[in-house]
Amino acid sequence: MLTKAIEVAAAFELLAEVEGGQDLGPTQILKLLYYGQALSLTEKGRPLFDGKFEALPHGPVEPTVWQFIRDRGGFRTGWREHLVSMRVQLPDETWEIVRDVFKVFGGLTPIQLSNAARAELPCLEARDGKRWDGRSDQMIDECAIRDFYAEVLDDGMDVMQELLIAPEPDAPAWALPYRLGVNIKRLVGHPFLNDAFSRDLRRKVGLAEFPDDWRGFDFSPLQNRT
Image (cartoon, rainbow, N blue to C red):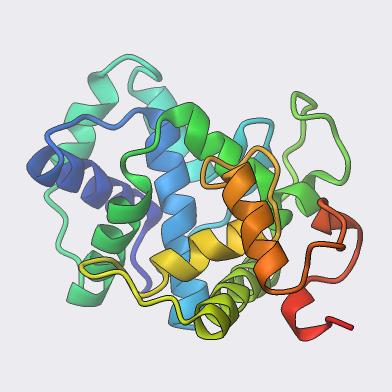
């Protein structure tokens, strides 16, 4: 039986308190869940938990967890006590993904996390051109999530190999390829996009002439250079 989304949400909140000395807000919980699911689909080939995501104006939201939070006070703090009191027992592999995702994304603010997820293709495609504040409850396709993040990580790995960039010590193996992939694809609005670094990176790997916005054509630019 798959782990429930609310159990993984409780794990993120507990980890934030124990290792980060912080309380997570609803937006942070919901976006960390999304990235946990995305990395599990990409790296393990299976979901981290039993849950889907709606492409809402502020990014992906797992509806059962959002309902849990709303039923217990919403943006007030009552829901957090219920979440932590669950004392969930999760497989070691699940905890590993939770810790890795928290290492990479746990320091981002709610706005930064929303901007990250909204800049990436799965949420953009599910919203189908709607304005950022336009209402939508369209579900994000799991295959789209897996394929997109696999693409980003592959591009990042290609950059590392081409430019002989060493892996980061004490960081998840996917962390640096992910950040490099974000900059190669110039995901506008993403908190990991650094404009000067991105342009220099693309120049070094021969992508300086490619358009800034990758949404209009095929990904995998490193495999399709002419």
